[in-house]
Length: 453
Image (cartoon, rainbow, N blue to C red; front, side, top):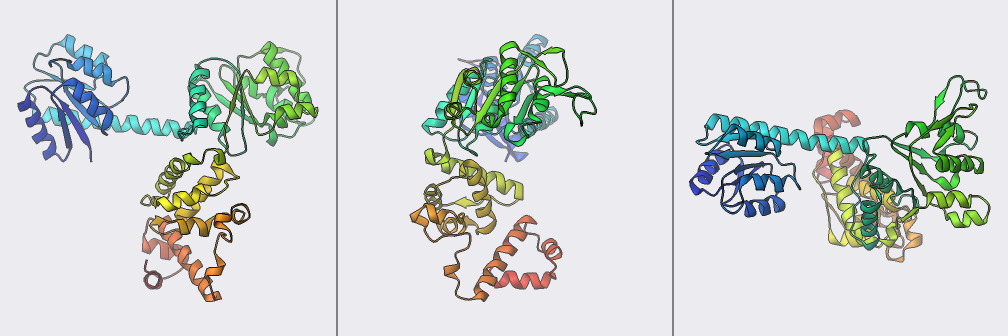
């Protein structure tokens, strides 16, 4: 339900506004002073604020200025002493609109609806921007994650190069994205290069570009990643897999802020902040002659280590809950509850695949479990490899075959899980599900009844 906060020191005004808004099916909260209003705004989910300007202790303009420091909730300012100057000042400070007392009912309701629509659009725009940028929140409150967040806040606004270390799937790319997001270069591009995915003979062309005819397949000029990231950030993922010849050219580019395309002679000046990441021990790679020490020192002005999930198991409930909400929303189904025992079972697993493995596991549990995700579900649907790593769930696998005595039991189990998955995928629409799986509606209903679904 949409919630409106009224801040006004006159009780009759608050009561009148409450009656009007509640009649229109809005939930209404109120405060008789600015300080209390700000506290409510910080603690409650508020969609719109109606705020008087002339109040004791803290006037409406002060409330508006303070609120805009921590929220984008739209404000409608109201006053019995309205002037053009007051309206202009309110708009300048971020108010959606300004209304004079006595309030006109029709104008009030239209303004409220318009302000709420704007607030919805602002929220949707933020969500879309976040989806487009692929930048999700760094979840968790463990010591390691708290240290990473602090480092990002300090390092991001600078142009210092950062080397991010950590196991595969631990979240190194997310750290790099936040370093860019919070930097002064956030409006410029973040260009990513997976050094492990590009053949060694092509990595130089990928990074620095090439001129037409510089090699057999160079049929036209190509702009490299350094030029594409000019003014922004270049993220070199899996830098430990880069060839020594490419390392030498990257080192030169970092030293001189200049590059030369493959097959070209012209030096091109670039302004790029480089963030690198690796799952390898680069000092060991240096000892073995696989990585240049001078490049390592150029890249590691700031070192950030991302702990594995096994090192931050206290963050698993937060991560699992977030993944569960996100995946259920994607599947358009009600959010499933993960019980406390299920959370403990999740925390008992080894998580060799880190965050990526946890998300996959949560998605599997959502598909295969009933309304609640129980510890028995976790033990039953855990990865097959888990049993060899963790004695607490020894003998568990994707399907616990020991619980099925006959082939018929197995078929019945598989059929039930298949029907649950397809129903959820089709938003519990029996008619649509029956068409997609090739059963008549009556046959499907009979099977659902058989399984108590």
